[in-house]
Length: 467
Ligand SMILES: *Cc1c(COP(=O)(O)O)cnc(C)c1O
Image (cartoon, rainbow, N blue to C red; front, side, top):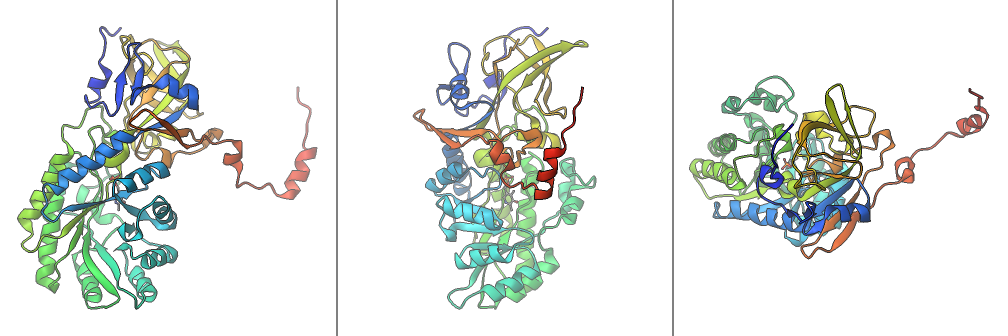
């Protein structure tokens, strides 16, 4: 038995992210009670809060621009959450696009981003994606020699192709931060060295020599996405130091000084499911901005390049709540289970990366937790959303809300067990609600399947009589 009540919102960091609790104990999002949302749009349901995304943009922009005299430009990594409504909202906020491949490039364009404000990434980009980027005068973060050959062919006399060189940064000093995030089992620096991306110092100097005097290319600078592998700002400082050291070494070696440094994404949030822990991150975006920019300012002895950022998780992670509905509760062998209608196939990083999500008793936010329960989804794998979580007594029809479903959730969601992917809605600052993705149907799941005619004929006669 657990005594007393829990202030759930305080427990998840005290930053409401548009969340509040009404007099009846119901969680509200931008003032709208969540039971109203599920009764209007069904369950499970992805709910995006517009205002949170706008605030995230502002805060990230301020954190870097106030620490970097030549300013910082933001390019949203659409892989994090490919919702076109979110992408359009970010376009309104003046956020450029970071894309991988043809489809993301097209989606980013169609959601209102000017092609010149798009960065194309990828370890082995398709010729069609490169052609689109060349035609659109987008920025290409070069990641292989083959790609340079293709670009040489695609370049037109009209203007040079804007490129950065993606670097392979793997400073030994990162090993003090542990490598538990990486699945390779070796050290952090070894993991980064063995990953497929980027050019080492020797390889990069050859690329610089090849591109610098080629009129087909406009070499802007470097791309240096390392990504989030820890919440420790000191690790970001180390990456910044390494980047400055690399830049300085290249200046001495081949005389190149960048106009742009693209720091990539990976900027951690207050709540980071990927940290695999319930603890709220004690660091804010300003700490990461300070760690990175101070290292760069101290180490770069030359004109300061423009900073590019490619945030994904930071802009959208906390802006989406996944609402689910309790379907069954059971007690047996001294344990309790709460079954909800959302499975881990909507939060795949629980299965693939042991991500840890908060689970809020959204329809009983003021009821005291009575027990610990394991919260599970309906699919025919264990589908454990959370083990031994303190929960009030919940019944069929109650709502469980899962914050931080804005990053790497919908985009990784599968239709396993014939589960249609949920609807998505967006709530405007005035409480207005828009459907931004309709719930899938049987037809959506089977749209591209074809039964060969010979089986279709057979299945008519495959009837058996069984007891
Ligand atoms: C994934 C990715 C990002 C975004 O990463 P977040 O951790 O979501 O911020 C940015 N740039 C590149 C190249 C990426 O692969």
